[in-house]
Length: 336
Image (cartoon, one colour):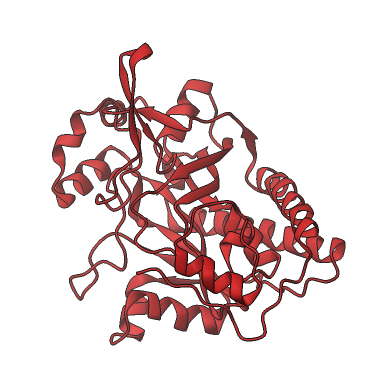
């Protein structure tokens, strides 16, 4: 169901072209802060991959990729959902070493987005990053250290933006509270997963919610995750409090990636062991790919948060339903 919420009395803090300048400031500044924080180098990335390679992100397994034929290449292409698996292969091909990694601009189309609202669009733009780790670094402490580095880069960028555009009044919490999805279920057993997140992030402002994909004690997972990139015991979402909308804003899904043992276990659990025969999965099972950690960080969501906008359509150009267009037009909220 599509929903569009305009807070009472909301007015954009920046004029239309000043907002474009602010978006440019965020995008150029944050990627510099990110690459320094995590020791990353930029690479070019694909908009689409070949069908049947196992490289595309299957998300929850229900979403259909935008697919098309390429007669000149005698191939079928799929627009990426994300670059979660492609990046791991790229690290191997570029010859990166442990402790170093890559980042790239990722653009995607998610035609089956469940609803269009203030935070969700069919157009996705992220900074995708991935770095090589050692076997002994596949642990929660290393994951949490990376989360703190990312949140630090976010806050540094936001504070610099506020100095450049004094009209903005945005404050993001630098301290990260780490919680597991099981802790949230135990704490709020009568709430839905989204309501649990809102309750926790309303209190702590910046939360890293860990352990997403495997069933909880209730028998249900907090949320669905594909079985072939994140280790469900060593992943999570970075959640920030959106003071304009008074709700949680997820800016990143990330984690330590599956090793061969974890891949087999999660494919079996998800009921898709046949994926082990795909080219990407065979490389992983044969030990040809490095151990890595990585994630995606929403560009438009960060721009929306840092500029105090109420709708993601104010900072990205996409397609919207007629009701969203009407509500925003009547409220004086300009969508790109």
